[in-house]
Image 1 (cartoon, helix red, strand yellow):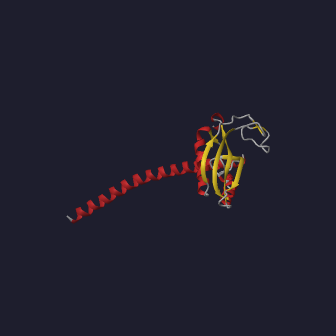
Image 2 (tube, one colour; image 1 turned 45 degrees about the vertical axis):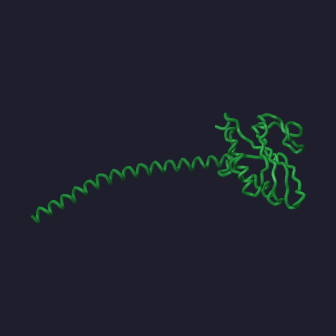
Image 3 (tube, helix red, strand yellow; image 1 turned 180 degrees about the vertical axis):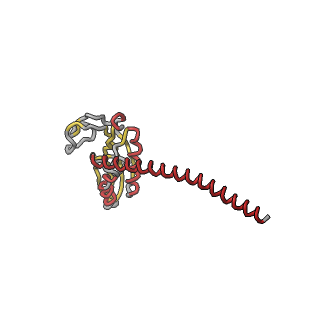
Length: 187
């Protein structure tokens, strides 16, 4: 009887070990295949990053948005301003300026003497914002606009005056141009 228990226990151990080895070797083979696949993908990703760096694409710099993504760019702009203490009284997008419209004094609504000369290759969405802030908040906001990640922008104009009751506070109007690509050129 004792002999049969030893044989049964030994056969169970042998069967469990055989099943374990069969499944384990299959899993090891699958793991090796996936490891090679991951290594190939990582190599491809590194190559693509190097190509982007070669062509001057900043990995975390501003992105040229498409017309469909304009609300995202406006949200980023206003959230950035709110985080810096800017109080927006109104935000009014103007009419989109199509590519090819010459820029400079008098060539489009709100253009200034210091505008860019020549035709611009992108669509532009001018956004007029009426705002209030302290003079420090306003200057910090204007100086940090190039840090936005989801939009490429340019300050077209601003007209800011001190608040009569509080000389450290300012109010005024800022027009910011948000540049974006046409849907057909974004791809």
